[in-house]
Image (cartoon, rainbow, N blue to C red; front, top):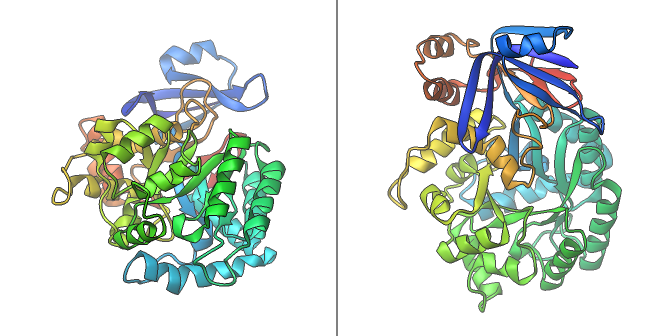
Length: 432
């Protein structure tokens, strides 16, 4: 077993954090050989129980759960920061042309290597990730995630219509490829497969029906897509499915709403949609930097809480503008505060942090597996340095409460705060 002594942050209850200011985190193998948290608490209480442990002491540092990113596009690594007039022009002018390159295994592999390194550099230890329509892109990302022991879910993008040549796939082959990839990768180590219809306009009825049939056949795989991000997109879906009650209900029609189904954005939905998500166990991946960048709209946090459906935070790179969970949490605070198009709310720092760790894990169906440091959780954590910049050091030194400390990190933090990322098998990735 191994142990770390530092200030330790964890969540004993939803959106309620505890910081052990002189804490001890003890990690060791469970019955299956996974490295999990064996004990967490104050150093004075736990140290006598483990007298022979080699303890790594990290004074002035905070150990916190590894971040969980609920929606990110690894093929859009080089699309980040591309100007556009909105979602659909951005897809047409930047995203689709770039994604064509992932038909090449070598290009997919080198991008996957950079992408995984960037996740770890920012402290992200679990991610639900889009690949492209090319199986090569999926194989490359899974292989790199497996090498780094990252918990990662991804899948081949399904898009057999309204897409340009080079990324558009063929219905039957796309479904056959999806099933073959499920059999090859799902449940291998820490990897999971996600059935991935890009969005309703890009998929024929036959492709959506086939995706739903695969989701029923393989009940423990994930499903990921987009819904109700942009008014033009919604109008397009209405033309394609004029009898559908809503955009979200199209996915319901094909059996694509269930636990472990995650839909990015969920901005322009109503309470009937929210009740449908709650009733089916479907989750929303809230993507605030992307929504602000593309001018898509604002996620309604008050309505989400009122109706009780699952949600968590996502970077949505490359529509999203940063891999940094700190930037994402800050953008979520801005989105919550907006009160012109919805009810404004001030999200508490502990709630923001929970949305990107244990709350996101719960939304993914991975509660008590990742996103927290309670006993039994996989030992994924980050070592944070709250003195890494002069301004952050000055501000955190004046914090009189946990909320003040966390909010200072959210507002002033970035990748420099993440000193180390430790994944389940206790290998270290140290930020440069």
